[in-house]
Every structure is written in C-alpha cells, then in structure tokens.
Amino acid sequence: MKRDPLQLSRRQRQIMEAIYAAGEATAADVTAALYDPPSNTAVRTLLRILEDKGHLTHEKRGREFVYRPTRPRGNVARGALRRLLATFFDHSLERALASYMTDPKTKPSDEELRRMSDLIDQARRKSK
Picture 1: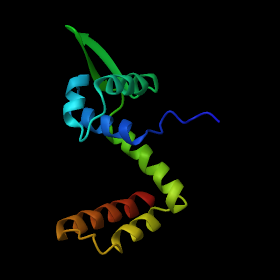
Picture 2: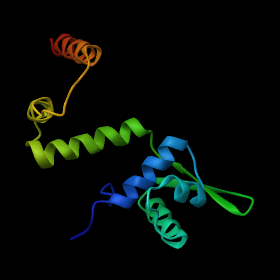
Picture 3: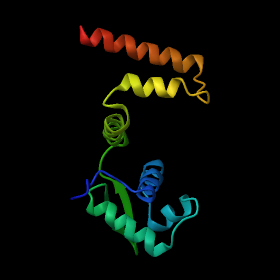
Picture 4: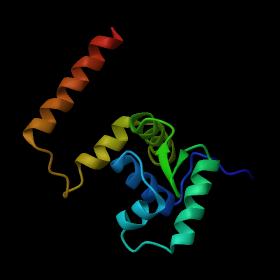
C-alpha cells in the first residue's frame, strides 16, 4: 500500500510547524525550534523526506540549505482539516464542531463566538 505524501509523521508535522512559523529555516533553526529534538542527522533526513514529498524546497546560502514551504499554510490546513473530518467525523463539520464545543475544556470568547456566527451568516448568504 502506497503512503499518501500529504500524511506526515508527528516529527514531520513539528518540523513543518517550525518552518511555517519562521517562514524559512535551516536544519539548525529547526533543531533549535523543536522540543526534545532528534539528532542533527535525523532532522536533516526528515527535511529531505519532506522535500521529497513536495512539502519543502531549499536553496543553498553559503554552506547551509535554507528550507521554505512549497504551499501556503492555509492551503495545507484546509487539506488537513478535510482529512480530519473524513477520518473522525464522517465528513461532517457539524459533528466536529459539536465535539469541540461540548468539551468542558473549550471556552471560546464572546469575540470568537461572534466571528463564528458571522462566518455562518456568510455561508448562508453564499448558499442562496
């Protein structure tokens, strides 16, 4: 069974998060950004794998490779959200939101609730 190149391991996700947060990063930058980082060799290997999967590109600056994401964070996030909804919520945004909102640890602010309400209103208008 061939693995989906969009699927990322926990470490690969951590590396992508570090690079998205910085905009671009060297292997040393990534290592410094990770909690309990693997060895430098492992980080370089993971960067190469992410590049082979199409998530990163690099350019050489002096003696270092500087890595950048190939796709905007928002595009990647939307794809990840679609996979999450399909995997855990039978493609239902309503079920996902209900699961999140009924969690006792969830405490959205009044401002967040207002923005969500505005988004729902916009979606209603768009579907008419």
